[in-house]
Length: 227
Figure 1 (cartoon, rainbow, N blue to C red):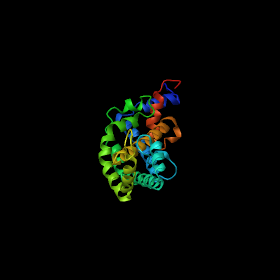
Figure 2: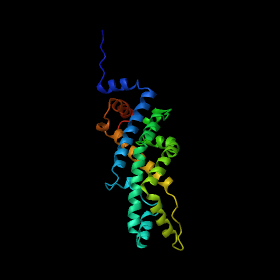
Figure 3: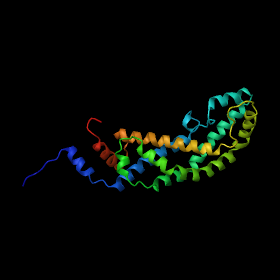
Figure 4: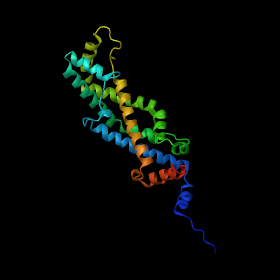
């Protein structure tokens, strides 16, 4: 009887070759979910100096903030920034099921094309493109509620009246920033998801579960030699 011996690489390729679209899809979803938990952790500690989870005025944020401080409204600016930042944090914490269910329920029709695209953030981009409208729909009422309960709205209105009273402004402050805050929080979450996906794709030690090891190990084997 003749025995055929396979190299370690050949054995891996043979095993990885049995990977199904469903298994690749589950691996991608697990990577996205780990990214969401990175975002949850960051938003849970919004006062650690992380700009991604801190409120900033829309548009030319630094210029708007300086103008308001020059008007003698420093304490109100500080209060609004703090309260909107905390509102973003609370909203993300309350919306954990919304984010996690959006990954769970996401249909990945062609997981192989996402996994093997050569784009280290392909799954995040697919997630963002397919799920942002639904996330906004479910997330915005949570933001509305948290902004209202933190008392940020009334203080923000003080800033709006003072700023918009300045003559010859090219652009006035919007009277309601809840949509902006919701979008900023969601974008911040996607940035954390993208960072985690990049880490899992490029760093073997970041693949902390057998599924991640199998799926992204398979992706590694499909790369052209030299990459």
